[in-house]
Length: 206
Image (cartoon, rainbow, N blue to C red; front, side, top):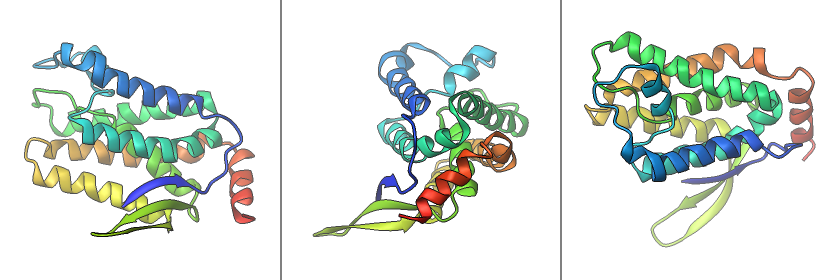
């Protein structure tokens, strides 16, 4: 299953979403190898870790889902509030991780906590949205529209399975939970009271 795009129309270029994608990609290829996190628990280390990834698959999955769902959330919140929401989601994810595992030797690695906040916020704002998805079979593929909640659920399930199967990554599961809880609890406070209903109305008449 490969999601391509959602069906929620947006009225502006998602500049902040593109910036966060670029920062994550550039951090992985140009900066991450030279920045050591071993034994560090200072603010700089935690801030840097929010834009790092464990591998290309980790990076690719996060960037793909941020591109698909982040632009609609950004359009609903506005650029400044989306920036604050994303960063606070990452901080909330890290905070829960640190609270549960204060003895961990490394900060959480990756933007999954912040992206979990974005995805859970999307799920509340756009319950009826669909995602254009490629379904891969052994000898052919097809393109279908799936409920966004199903695609989002698949992402969260993959994160949970990854944490459960990899003992070294298991503690990071709490970072995902922190991001999800933050997104669900605060998205209504950040969302525009005018723009979000308008997005849903435009989606309904497609």
